Image (cartoon, rainbow, N blue to C red; front, side):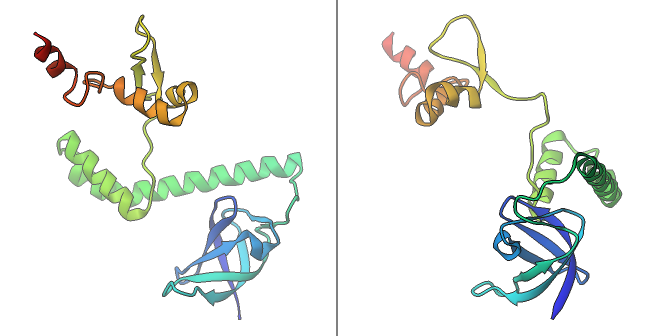
Length: 193
């Protein structure tokens, strides 16, 4: 039996559509011949239970306005319309979330900063949201092998030293890093005296 839903997310090879009853339906790119879905648009599908995952549903025989076939490209005009549509969706979602959490914020706004941050992290985890560092606040550390105070991000350490050595050097660059052996740099210096 054919169902309809609204595409909630698309992550490269899979995504989710939400039916009117709130059920999330998993849709893989194989069900649309390697194509993709456009977020916020309507899609039709048949549903099937997922083996080994009680209560989970996957979509098959997917079709509708949300489907973009493999290799299909949007014209420049359609691309601009798509950007506007997605911006409108984001703005609506932002307003919806602000309205939903306004009463919660009123209750926690006077708490100490660390308690507020803990509550926000817990709420984000409960909602399945990923926490992001605020833009402009990327942690940088001084490279312990260089003098002059030049600082670098974690990604720059990894790019220069490679993954394994980058982790080691990043940790060594932290305050109280591991330059002085297992006991730390201060205790190592004290033992030399």
